[in-house]
Length: 376
Image 1 (tube, rainbow, N blue to C red):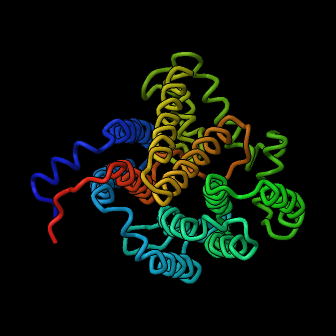
Image 2: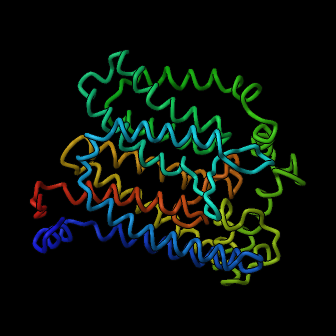
Image 3: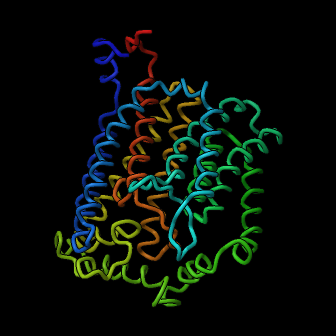
């Protein structure tokens, strides 16, 4: 436990700017979710769930910040095994949308949990520990293959859940972390070539008709206006109709009349654009960019490689989620069902994001070797 002196020392090292940014974003998210669910029958339930997740998320952030990230070295293998077990459990007991065939959730009574969200934080820890162990010989073929297996097992289990978006998030974290670890460019080029060669096989063999349709809609939004294209088209209409300053809070017709699909989750950015306009979109986007840059700053100033790799993994996760969600809402990227960090509805996602920030805060608070007054 921390004594009073240790607690005071710990507070002095915390990155309160980063904490403030994510709390503001989550508060904006609550306002947008209130507007998005206002006309729904389960409006009160969704607000209660998100509010509880908000409160628990702040607690999780503080707890994760208090734990010395270096201690995870001793438990990395255990964390990795638990992550695999959780993803396998989803395949056996998971539930999801019958339309897309995804099985990403485990339900306990009335509470639904999406383990793949939490495993992303676990991956940032275990993969960082792995990278630190091989950093001096990272370009040896054996080490590269082991790193690929480390990533591939988790990503593969997520793919089996039919959750392509989350699998790509793992890929972005993997690429960001091995890049800063100093992997040779020749391996990056080989990997890119391999991905390009694999894409036709993935499209024609591995992807479900629903996923194939999403790509076709991305290439031509008018391909399926009665189905997959409807979400993209309505999102673009909502954002465009908001113009510069928006139609006003709770005044967006696309939102309030139920014309905007998945408006509290995947298309929360559409609600933002319709009601707060371009200005509101730019402010939220700037806040998200500041969060990512702050994570990268802490990575750059970390006292060791482990902390740096962890922060880069988290920053990569937030970067992908931000670009993909906003990109699909404005028709620039395929729809993957990826939530917008801190703003989209979803308890698992919000808790994961806060826990991830807590992990970054833990690294940032220990950039200097200090005694937090921990009693043993």
